Image 1 (cartoon, helix red, strand yellow):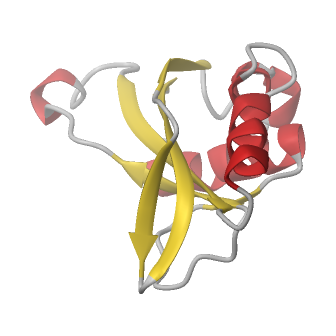
Image 2 (tube, rainbow, N blue to C red):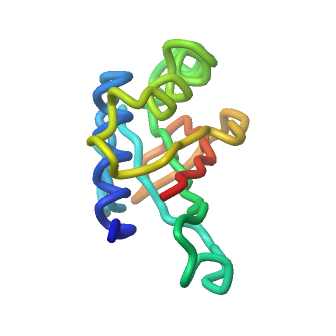
Length: 133
């Protein structure tokens, strides 16, 4: 049976393979920008336990350096492109191990915003992703 941890690792690898963006499967205290951090988001276990397959939500937060604000926003826009960006990386079955998941989709892309982690300021953007397994 496929586990959340296996899917989290494979999703991270799929994003890295499809975009070249370093994607970390788990949160870290330091941000090696540009990079993405995956988070498993809230779900109702009553809707997933005992089923042959279910939808699990994840959020990818992408961090880019904010030294040049316009360049940072352009980098986030490139990753948000429906083709060639994170959508393509997540939805391309070739980026996933065989038979691990049924499908994966980017369901929404947030707006670029400023975020601060450990006194360092970044431009960030969230990508909501659903993985069915």
